[in-house]
Image 1 (cartoon, rainbow, N blue to C red):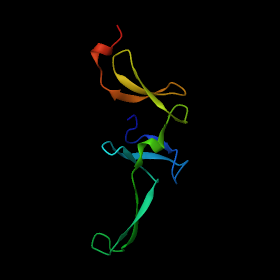
Image 2 (cartoon, rainbow, N blue to C red):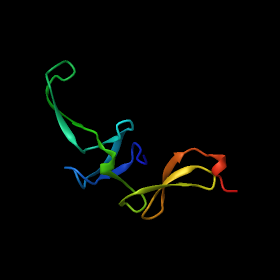
Image 3 (cartoon, one colour):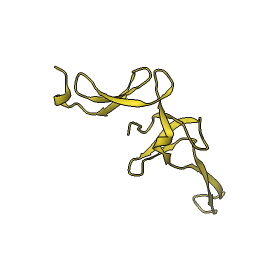
Image 4 (cartoon, rainbow, N blue to C red):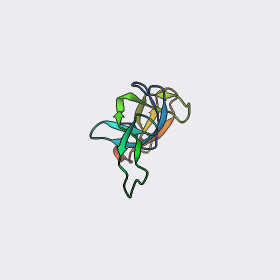
Length: 115
């Protein structure tokens, strides 16, 4: 999974197609992500001490990770990601369109360092 929390993603399928938002949470075991402002659902709540007003609360629901694409910070386009090893042996993800790095995926591994 090359999508992490606080990444900007674009929804590529479903009712919210075309919207972009920030990833709030990644649910790795279920293969889903929660994106800010996407897939909103209403929960009806009764009046209580915590919710003195009551009514309908709107919250984001998880969507499948295959329905989102990472938005590159350099070229500002929704793109696929790849993984590559850097000269020091650390693994990073990169934009397939422009080749810009997108953050570390794994720590330094001396066996993969170029001499």
